Length: 404
Image (cartoon, rainbow, N blue to C red; front, side, top):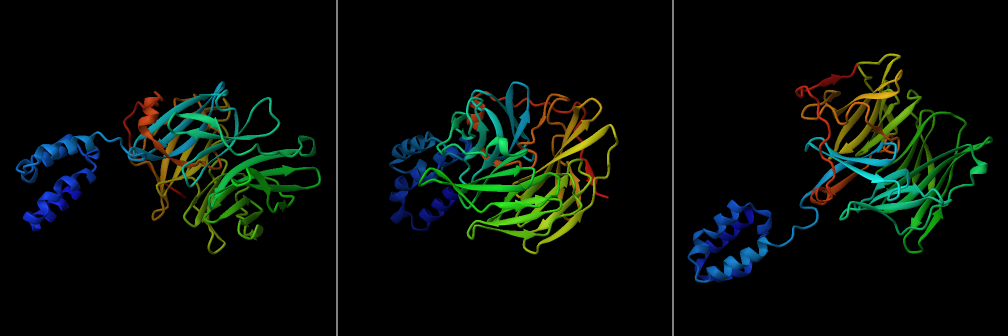
């Protein structure tokens, strides 16, 4: 109603000179964003009700009310989480603060074997996937309108000859509007990170400066933070500068041997180990690591906690799976949001259980990096996507876990 109130004040300031401008001003008010009560209040306002051209004004209001809502009006920033199932991909779109947990299922014909995922600054969702009968990986793009995955324009991504390597991990990131494909390759003699970037002008993947890695073993995470790409291991860390096409050594964490997940928030990178017993934050501007207090429950031989960090609406979230190592099943899952001032993980206002016990678990495709995109809710609802994810039988209680 703010725009309408401004119009009223403007007209009343010089009623005789400005009243005749009202019919040309009203179409610029987005009546389709107002409730029926707000629209009725405008139509019954003395300026409209007593105006000789009120019938014209009413018709203009009716036409404006029927205008389609602009894309993004009903959109919501949501984490895009890949989940493992036997015969299909399940993707969980969630915004914990808004209470939205939407599950979409896609068969392998529409979305083949997924290997990496990223969301661009233009809100394009890309998945690196490989058809069973093809030798090269391809990009699939999410169609927001149809809730469908389609083969993207970029040409197939060339991978190294499988006969020449023992380990092969793939990543897909975007920096400054450019897509980068990164492939970790291990052979008997060395370990390297191969980097290519996509050129929209030539529809070709161009080779970038590759990174020769040390002999250290362990998991790694690759993620963008600001204008750079970071390669992160427990004993080795590097930063790629796209403008100079060069890699620069940085200080590694050293105390996170089983690095599992990482997320970038502003100029900081948060990371944790596989069972969330070690957590650290890296300050990119000062090349300095800070130890975060460990999980209060270190777990037991039978139970482990698998963390997945992601940043949503400028807040750091933790999706935690409780894993029964004896039965090899997911027993439960929890959501927490990080309070930096108190160094505590709080579940205040968050749904305590996301999936049914043992039904599914987060794929490692989204483990190291859980991208965030703006999802258009009416289109998801139109496609009949399941929003009836299990809630805990017990009443939701606030849980604040302090790190020790």
